[in-house]
Picture 1 (cartoon, rainbow, N blue to C red):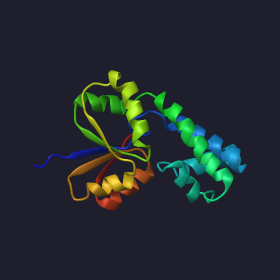
Picture 2 (tube, rainbow, N blue to C red; picture 1 turned 90 degrees about the horizontal axis):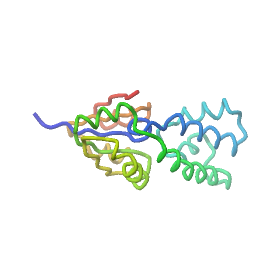
Picture 3 (cartoon, rainbow, N blue to C red; picture 1 turned 120 degrees about the vertical axis):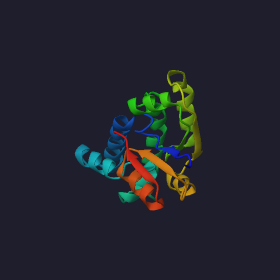
Picture 4 (cartoon, rainbow, N blue to C red; picture 1 turned 30 degrees about the horizontal axis):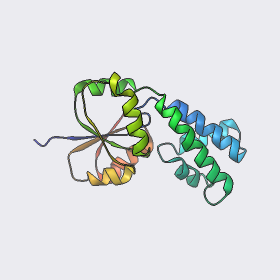
Length: 172
């Protein structure tokens, strides 16, 4: 039987940062586009799992205004501190104890993923993590036709896995 490839989403699956990122996204949308906090929160969660600039495009705010570019830049800069300071999820800590190798497919840039791994690796035991792609969809397409499982935490993750015929497991 062929060995199954394990692919992991980053934010919310490996790193316990989704609530903090949602607060950051809500704040940013509220600040730059003047919608209520409640509406901004709903907007953020309705597009979660994608790069923030892509979320803004989906919400009709990006491009080409100066405020939309500034919002995306502010969010991405603040995301670095939020992510680096966020611990691994309980699920990921348990996964690492199994010692299985895994690939990360994320909208989060590889440089930030490696920085996070540098900070948190001493507290993790076991498995090896390979960061291969910045673009989640491209990474998953690379594994089309290969026995693989994609672990993620958003509807968007599930949608992408389904597009390329990869088994999806939702991590809470």
